Length: 333
Image (cartoon, rainbow, N blue to C red; front, side):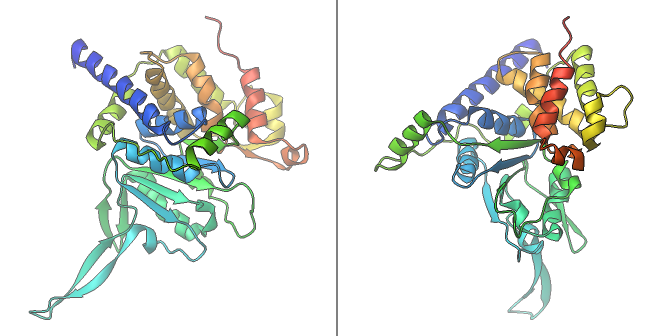
């Protein structure tokens, strides 16, 4: 790719990012950091776990982004009686009325879309949750021994409620590791909440317009991977992830004290890819230490497993990661 074409593609990427923000802002108030992280997931081609209290516009955010991107949106409400076939689809027997011959016909499930909202994913048992594993990793699904490719791009944006844990099923570690981010959605401030009231309690309504399409998003994902990263910045990302593993030599003492298991190699891959997307979104053409540090917490918070000592001292993953970032500052050079 020559320089002129590359420059044109980068300018288009930044223009689409700007237009997406403008369209989403017609419906969504505040939550700038959350919106940035969801868009990074889309531009990287990763999946996002959104954790937030009821009424914080998790579903509205996902639906609005899907409309803005011009993608096929599907929603699954996860419940205890949901079966894997309710997600992937199933084979049914159809009879030809003229010949009487019966054949198996595959009926696609809601997973055959571009953006899949897995609403309250922790409300269904692990057997059903695992129906998403192959789709999230391989962008495909297998039903009765038959392999089906899913449409691209494909994103799983799952939500879960941090309260009302009775009757819920924690996500298996293998599935958590496949999410690029665990995004925490909090309350709005007073000014933002007033703006929500003005927007939603009148007869006015906003309809976001599509600003891109599926093929262009796939091109953006390739563009993100082309963003250069210096060896020193990549080594800093590796050092941060390896420092979460209590068995590694030279890790901080509080990691050995509070952490049972650290982040995997997939965390390093996702951290670097997300930093590349963030650099382009901020109109830079290379990754900086700040890109790595700003995204370390949402990438790692669901990948480290704390022990009883941390629970006893009332420490969360975010507390541990904050101490880690203080212990591992970016190099001065």
